[in-house]
Image 1 (cartoon, one colour):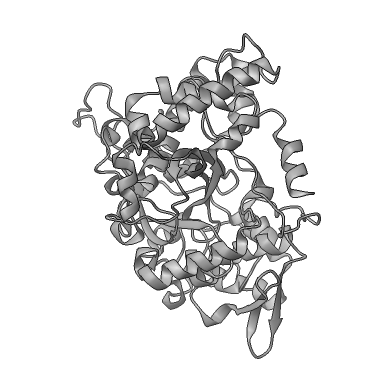
Image 2 (cartoon, rainbow, N blue to C red):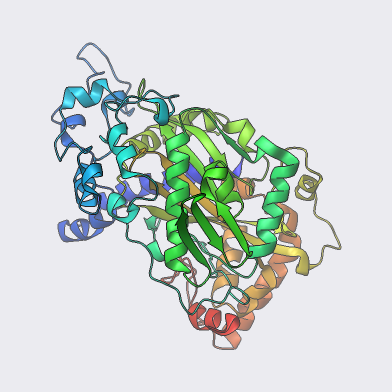
Length: 502
């Protein structure tokens, strides 16, 4: 099992658990909780319990306990035309003339949806993206439009206190016990979509080196992904300029067009001089996988990606595949997860991006590990003299969001490493991790491949757990469970600020 497949599977698990959790709540609890869940798509295009799916006729029999077939080609993401009209208020008169207004004829839209492999630059003006926005309108918006308005997700607050020299990523500890008691999906913190730390420079250097060595194994894009790649890159740069204005800025020149200034690296990137994913590669130490809707079947396919943090797989082994094809080797995916994932992707709005975290234990800090990499052998045995100092918690902190123009869904994550030895000072974490390693579901622990370090880690965790109780850091009668502060731990914020100095 690979991390990309595993990440999506456990995100799907969270969705299923969410549904079950909602059903056992009372009415007022449900109403409060539902504000965090994605709203439904445009009602005129979605089959409901009152309107049978077009693909399901009385003659078609559905197996017991199996979801009915769904005509996903008839389901489109929630429209962003209203946001488009608001965005137009800031455009020039000549640009406004190219916009159609709030309403678009249904049949015109459906007949004009852009084909799966078409470059938007070569399409006619009456071609539409799945978001009900015409290519004429996309072009009228130009470069770097107001994506905050278009998506409904505000730009981040400026982080003026931030100092790249000492900055540390927040100490994510996405440890949950028991797995069925809480949901793993939460609303994305919009200020923290893209997060930098003091490892920024060496990480960028490492990632560029990985591309130079492995090429399309870490970065590739297929026809039809042009708009989504451009859109993602522009949104990411707008975020950096808003969040870290002391380090990043964007200007426009007559001879070079848009130029991105990176004061940390001391570089200037002429936007039109390279592919959008290469702009990201040279300026952002995070991974992105772009999933596009195929109008012929309504399902989502992996069409472009920059992924330098994959363990046991790479872009070239997954690109072009449908969601279910990516997960074909995964046990029980078809029976238990496929329907939920396809439905979630079909309806996800731009306004409600989500976040979650996955974790594992690693020897050293492997970032990219293609099949056959020598580092894989560490997972095959328990090295007797393995020192604790070499063992790290790896957290892949992930977000999932829909882009407002192309309708693409972007899976984004960053790999963060923490020495296990630091858990000694983190309240409840030793007990929680020990519980997971000792009593966690067998298939889950096998997926995480923790066995190769457990002989070193478990004795230390047990010692620290007792030590924390003896020192009063943890209550004596505390029953191990997911922390209220999850994905962090009590006192994390003060400790984090103190260690980075701001």
